[in-house]
Image 1 (cartoon, rainbow, N blue to C red):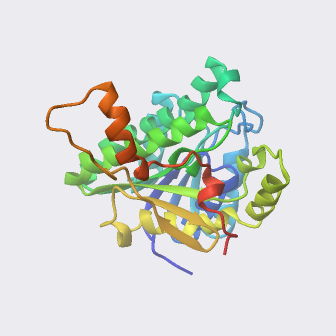
Image 2: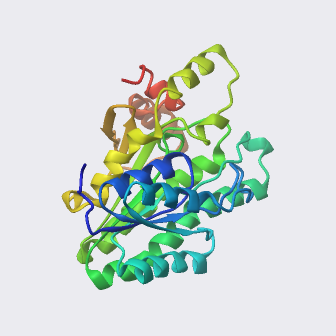
Image 3: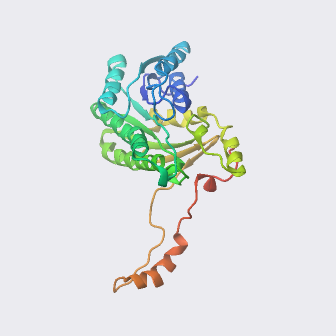
Amino acid sequence: MSEILKDKVILITGAGGGIGRDLALAAGRAGAAVVVNDIGASLKGDRENAGAAQSVVKEIEAAGGQAIANAGSVSDPDAAKQMVDDAVGAFGRLDAVINNAGILRDGFFHKMTYEDFDAVIKVHLYGAFNVSRAAADQFRAQESGAIINMTSTSGLIGNLAQANYSAAKMGITALSKSMALDLKRWNVTSNCIAPFAWSRMTSAIKVDSPEQAERVKKLQEMSPAKIAPLAVYLASDAGRDVTGQIFTCRNNELFVMSQSRPLRSVHRSEGWTPETVADHAMPALKAGFVPLDVSADVFHWDPV
């Protein structure tokens, strides 16, 4: 059994089920003491199972590990601070945070309500900020720490009917990079993982074509447990030199994703007019245009 996280303390949000549960179990098996956070919410964010976090704690303890439960909402900054206080109070320190909590309220943009946009942003983006900000004070005092943020190819690449979720997940990647830059002097790392796994969230993917149905069938073969090794590594001392990166985990494949950089340029010494933009700039830049594709168009081969 790996002990790569021996004597480490890890806070994992949204760890009462799905990917978060597997992350928590893997961290416990690797020797970490785990703060299992989960409000016991439905996929849309409504509280429905107050014992979700405690159930995972029992699994970790049954396997010989240490864990405590926390049922606070990541969207509440005071609750996020309490998560960190619980970790330090129970185990004396906090070494890593995995921002995994999330909800879905899918819908086409022209039908999306303010409430559904706001709720998803609050949990994903504000949640990642709240928990990371609370942990940052502890990490700075220790001069060490790791932040692991769950993003999605829905944001990195695109997806239909997920404007709120995509915006939140793309925002998390920018937040993660900023945290990596700002906290580097205290030896704190910040990275993203875009997971491919069959979970409560992916089970809500709209299936409106035979191609999409086949895609979902392949997704169902990918266990949330496949995400855990990368997350555990990033939380460990072995990953302390890796920061500011975006990774994707797809069954047995690991990818490092590109980040926005200039692709092509065009220059006109006398400046531009709308007409020269049309006649010169756009034809010259067109070869660098990114197609209007979705995640399935980019990851078009079967998971291996």
